[in-house]
Length: 277
Image (cartoon, rainbow, N blue to C red; front, side, top):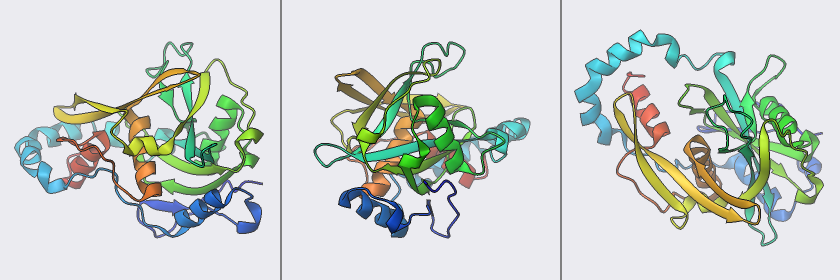
């Protein structure tokens, strides 16, 4: 059986899964990756030095403190009801590259703000979920029919904050053989399932950005274009930020692209550090 419970560790930025060598039969590359995730300390993806934001933060401090007080509940993201998890399911491609499974949300989700968007399998934590790994695996089963027994959970990354103030925990899992995965889509939620090379989220070739604003603060929105036999896809927003971080941790290098503004996660971190959010 796959290990569903992922206990906490003292390692900053990464929580370790319950990997056992005699229970994972993946390729040497995946076995090496599993061992790597057990011992490494993550490298921040494109972390901007917080002092670079100090001047702007100081100039808006009083305004933002007022907003934060008025929206106290808006920033309470630690409760179970405001928690979610996504599965970063990695496997080895035909060219020995690491690839990650993604979905394109169904347009039937007309009331969902992310209808038609690319996303990692995942969703909100439910009452019966014992932890974040259980949430991610359950959602992957419900959305794309991924058997949780095929997935070896090896780590969790630092939580992300969505624009709706959900605390989203990325759970890293390894799929030993992609051929064992027979997708069964919940067509009410998922239009298609596809995969991309993880390393693309460190490269400039398919990357572009847009400048956005949140509560008066400017930030960078990452966008990646990807084309395959299954279609043309745009990977952006929270999904893009999570995969940039995952690629940075796994490959132990920062992205090639640089920006003059923080992304949404870096902005949230800076505001929190300065006791604004």
